[in-house]
Length: 238
Image (tube, rainbow, N blue to C red; front, side, top):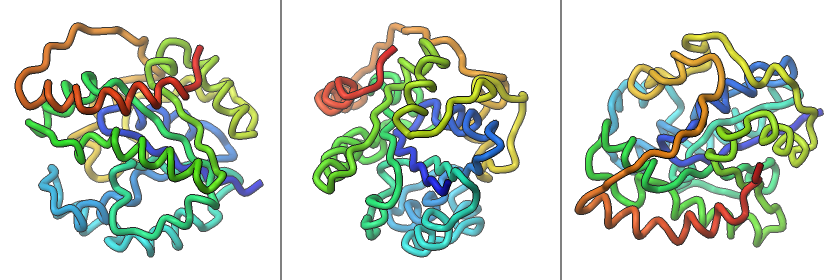
């Protein structure tokens, strides 16, 4: 088997936990956001640890695709990625990989993102890009799997069983638990973003919170909502 799985997440999702889940498999090697430096260079955004990230990774996304994403590393290679990192890059490789679009409710994303970077914009949140990516993949007859993180957290075992079935790989019970702490695959930015997952040993239960956004954050959430509703209607459910 030589399966390449690209997880196209939005920020402030449980994508790192899902990466940790796949890392428990003996047949799988995981990669943490190999296109991050490419995105930082192309977008010019000021993220925490920006210069260190640029120093730690290949900055040319097309080189990353060829040397990492399209290279065989293990029977299964799992790439945790962000959909909005796909800027100024040749996307022909998408037809050669299995694609998962991993979504979250925009209110939850924005409320969490603001704690690190205030007043995010549409291009920071990634939901519109996920919507565009979905349609792009459908147009090339490589329909992606869509997974809403709320379903993964409500019933991790069933959601992972369904996900593995669609990926045509066997589900493994060990995907539900991991050891507390960091992993060697973590990007150097982990200390800014991964505190919760480092304190976990499995998927935390889904808790629906009351979120009251204001001003530009509320406006952004309302603009994101139609994209989210379209995608969540395509999601694996439990």
